[in-house]
Image (cartoon, rainbow, N blue to C red; front, side, top):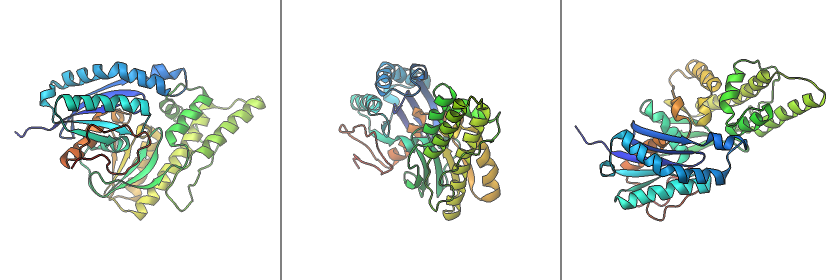
Length: 345
């Protein structure tokens, strides 16, 4: 039996500290995630300074737990992968420095991974990728349509011009009194309500593949404030359903249009908002009827949030291509899909 390539992968871009051991980019031996949701709930969103402190407290525990759960030692590892952007700079620095320390101490190659590439490669645990593919990447701070001609090649076809879908969920969650993170609860409420408010579908007919959710957010907030002023009581479930219907309509229609222009073998749905049941159901219904030759690959629900396993999967592709970083690797909070700085070939 051939020896497996084991990668120790770090993810600390926001409010999850995660360390995983991944074999050959496709088998998860461990995936330890320490979440900070309870610490940020009372603020209604992530406080960067609080997040960084939590990462410092958790990271060494996560490393130990990941290695022991995978039943491996540092000597068994072939490489170390780490998210170096995009994300909160203080949070990223904790993961980057931990990964650099492990790589240096144990003479292992260091692989710098783009967090968004990690989200796409979470779907790789479902089945192998077939190219070309299109990824609909919907996470807290990003909404993007990404075209991939081959492993590790990313071309942004459309992106959000203001609030990403995930940000809009959290912002309207505050108005509805839903605790952070609001996405899951709003999704559940939406399934119990009706789209009675018919909120705007921003940019749905524009001749591009970009997104905008700030107008929807404003329309939502104005509707609720107006009702408060005149003493009207609105159904929170109907508000949630109307909001979600607008988001899902825009995401789906733009995706279907881009698939018409760029035929692909697979459509990958990934990112935190990819866990949304309304969006998953709509794509599962529409894609087979409109594009029967395009296969839908949904990132597993438990890997839609930030986690180390997805970084290990993306990092393995770079490992195969010897795309390594060195001791000068730094966090890049506004990193974009531009393959790949700081590489030693």
